[in-house]
Image (cartoon, rainbow, N blue to C red):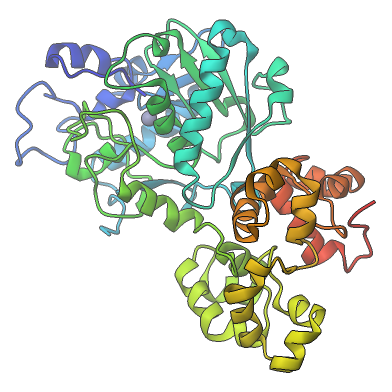
Length: 461
Ligand SMILES: [Zn+2]
């Protein structure tokens, strides 16, 4: 995030001059009227381009676009070629005009895949000293904003003492810097571990009103999920970067990813707009419901993935309602309609042995509140008994306990069944831990359901 610059164009120019953000700002201090060119009026030479990137001290990393790292002269040179091509009209900006835009690498969306998106781990360096707790809390609040969709960040506090760019137990590190031209900078998912850092400059702890540290981090975390600066879109008419992006929604001048100083409309703290949430949804999908977890459903049934694509959330939901339920397909870790009907004789007597639709309706309308067991892996009675804090919070409110599982407990590695203990499973199956991460609980649980159990692996001690 670049420092704010509401005060005066002169000040803004000085601030922009530190990064590639200034590329589109030929005449940026002048009136930005509707007839302004969508493209820069002149194309920078490589030397000019290079002079505007900021080289981080003691590293080979250059900061471009205000808060984005690229590695070495090669990275800078590749980016310059894209810039020249796009500045000369050599490629069209993102083709869909349907506010959020996602970075593109090799003609594909730059995003976390399904097995990773629910376990984006990070550490917070203890080198923050007296600001450490402030950063931990601001990261918790900023990650929560993005977790309105099916994305989960995980703070690995056990790694904070060795929180650096070579720590491979986390996806990214959060570290303090000082003397940088930015408030904070981040990275995109496709980048290598060495540059997957969120660096927070000492100035971020000063008065940056109306921005808070949490707001600044909401913006930076958007980059870590693949989202580009909204102001590189033609509608901003300034701050052009390049055309390597795809539109997820319509242009949004108030987006958390839009620098206010680049013709943005937001004058408050940096918050996600409704359009930001919609854009993130389109890439990462919805949170789980009580009977179906649409992402689980789409991405574990490969016929559906092939038919609808890896982000066909709405089509997958429609398939569930129209075909998946009557077919008795499994739609969530916490609900397996075949297990449910097979477990309860009273339901078989009432509905018959294969009336999956009736059994699913029973689960939603009665079974959940009665505290019935939804799957081999989720037994609400066991969940409450094994987690005294939840029992104290929810008592016999089984629906609330289920809601805790699907929004939090699953991602915290809590145990919810006598037959499956995800922490045990990861500890005893190092191949699973190596493939997805030692604390990637949702990926490990799904490995057990769709592969490990059939392979004869043990689910619990
Ligand atoms: Zn940014």
